[in-house]
Length: 298
Image 1 (cartoon, rainbow, N blue to C red):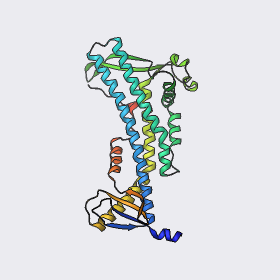
Image 2: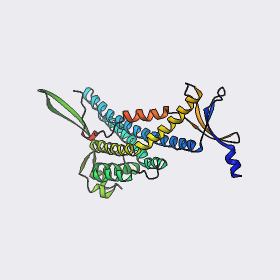
Image 3: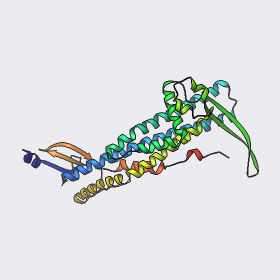
Image 4: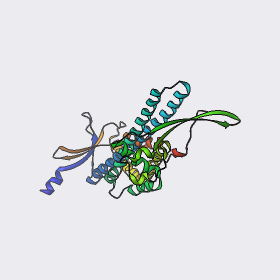
């Protein structure tokens, strides 16, 4: 019975079109390698997409900071409008929290689907232990989920600074959390004891994002061989079909597992979606060192 089943099972590559009946037969091993490769690239793309969302939310936070400072410099801002500034920044920080937690909590799941030996738990622990800002942000995220909003107060500061013998009035917008406001909440006590009376939230956020940049760098290094092997596996099958068929069109090529003329499983053979991953890796370079960067419009 088993032999009959094996004899009726076949694996082919062909186009998913009614007008094309050109097909090549491949081995079960080739089909399974393609299945693994597709799953590998899909999970790696998901990781890159989630990291992209982290950076996009961080970008929105920094952009809002700059826009609100510019508004304050050009227009007369009353108390209600300044409160709206604080609310906008709270929104940006909460969006950033959401994207970071999504990245942080799913990354090992994606890695295990690629290779059960892959993990970044020790890298996350290292960043947590090495950066009090990471620890503060993790405690603050839990505080925001169950208690209040991320910022306790905002502070606008202006000072004269000399740039190339020209004096310019420099404005900064500070975001702070205070120990006194956190004392009567369920904010993590061991973290609270390490904090100053006033904590610079901007510095914490920038360091926090930097930490995940370091983690993401480790992820990319870990996956380098897996992603290269997966891409080569798909390219080989793809080229094999194109050379056999003489077809220059690359759309709709799929691998099929067929039993008694019934399709059991099908896998698209394409790399356009993996090209997006490559573009994301080029765009989102890591690490970025936001905590040591300063931009101005001078």
